[in-house]
Structures are given as C-alpha cells and as structure tokens.
Image (cartoon, rainbow, N blue to C red; front, side):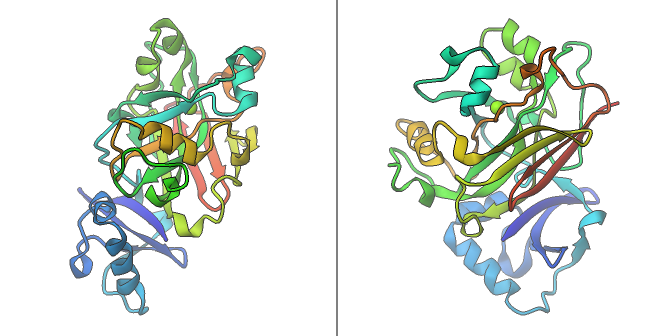
Length: 289
Ligand code: MG
C-alpha cells in the first residue's frame, strides 16, 4: 500500500493511493487519526486497512493527487532522522578520496524541524549558507520496536520505504566539526511523496535512484551500490539503542551531489529538485526563489 499524509484545511489527514486517487483513512472504522498511530499498532493496522478497502464503496472522502497539499508521510516525527554518511563508494570518493570510504557505518542525525513534504518549498537560508546541496536517498521507516536486531531479522522490523532529500549546508557542515547544524536547517529534509509498505518492494537493495536539478540528471545509481546494506544498518543502529516504530533512517546518497562537481554546483534560489526511486515515485521540491 502507498500511504500518504496530507493537509485538509487546518487538519492533518492520511490515506492510501488507489487508482490515482487518495482515499482518506483517518478515523474510518476506528482507524487511528494519524499514520504514526497506525504504524505503532503493528500488523493489525495493515489488516484493518485492507479490510476497510476491500469493497470499492469506502465511505471516506477521496481526493485527486493534484488537489491535496502533501505532507511528509510522517509529519510529526518523534526523533531525529538517522542518516548514514558515505554509504556509496563513488560518493565517498567524490567527497575526498579512496581514504574516505568508511570501514564502519558512519551515522549522523537531522533534527525534526527539518521535515517537510512533497511539493513544499525549501528555505534557502541565504543569510548563513552559500553551499546548500541536495542528496537523494532511499529512507527506511521502522515498523516494529527492537534492540539487538540481527541482520537476519532486520527487514521484519521495517514498515516501509520512502524517498528523502538530505539537504545539506556544506559550509556549515565543515565549519562546525559535527554535521548537526549543517544538516538541520528548517525545511532541509523533504520526505515522500508516498510511504510504500515493504510487501510492495521486492528487493530494496535493487532500486534505481535518480536525482534531477532543473530537469538535468545529477545522480543516477542503484541501491545495490550501498556499502552497508539495510539489514546491516538496522542491526548496527539497534545494537544498544532501541529502535521505535516511526523511526526514519536515510541510507545514504550516491555520487553526483553538487559538492562533487568541479567547480561545485550548489543549489541556486528557485532550483527544482526531483528525486525518483523505482516503485516509490518522485519527490519534488523547489528552493525558495
Ligand atoms: Mg545524506
């Protein structure tokens, strides 16, 4: 199922995409009011949604995809977004050299204030950065709580997959030692448009990923190129830290970020960013003009 969160008037809603339309689910037949509440209910939630959708005459309202204001599939995340750094060999090299290919997983986080949805405007933060950069990534959403998760069991803890743009102020990332400030400016984590349940992704480690800026292809790769696979990432993160339903993990970006060009090609005001991942759709956002 393709879950979507969106805004109707002044309230947040969620639903699923069916035949090109979004069917609202919030509150229908006792379903929770937001998608995170559903994910926290576990398998029972998906079964209930399937039951509600099984006949074609669902009573809830439905919307055209052009007519909704999209939100991140999880608009009210509780914890920082966890991100893997330098998880594609060619990207690690473009950020420095062969020496930059990590031996162990490198993790940083983005603060929750960064999260926005498909179609929302990214602030340019021109007063503090001249090096805003895009990073197209596959993101994993955790469905089942766990600690000490083995690589064999890791995918059982996944609810689904979505697209994430790990927008980064390169100058601030470098200046402040730790990445946190450079990765956590408001609106610099677009997520969506859909959260696709894992049963509809045959192999998350074999998905084409493409980033375009103003229709020009900048990143073109496949998730099979990851250095650390999704099970390894989940297993490593959960060694001593309990992962919770609704946690979002960004799995790293391939080569072709603006900083990787010579000379660098950082984002300019008004630039349109599109990240496309096979089966997951296209996440589109524009930088404030
Ligand atoms: Mg990244």
